[in-house]
Image 1 (spheres, helix red, strand yellow):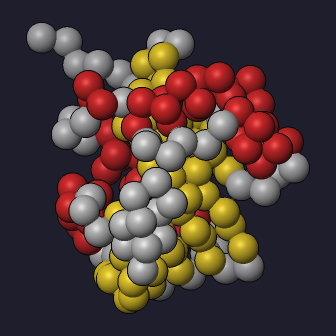
Image 2 (cartoon, rainbow, N blue to C red):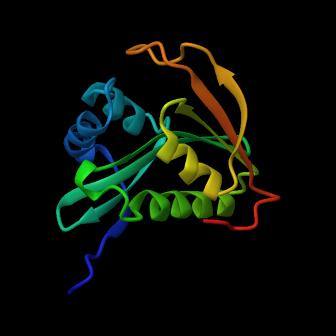
Length: 156
């Protein structure tokens, strides 16, 4: 059996259609093309992805502010979940963030998204708070998670 190869890449304006399509497959309250386009054009956030050929298999968007990274979204194509892509992508993002001098990483995750919480915990993220009724589509709570990158042992 041959191993499927994925290429890690920084995504840009040319990738907006693929990002919107993957976002729609993965989230009940997806970002639209305009949100991606404006964020990328104005360099508000970074987006990195894993590609297989021309197909976008996964992506992660994040802000880098001062010495902190805020992970906005991680999406893995539904048929490819549990194959390690989210872990690989998050590991790459955290390495890049550390090389850029980030000292901490933050994110919000749905209270019901236990697989994502496990992924983040594997990398050393800890729950530090709750945002009640954070998600507009369901009113579900979000758990705030933080990683002290200076103390992190490179887990993952």
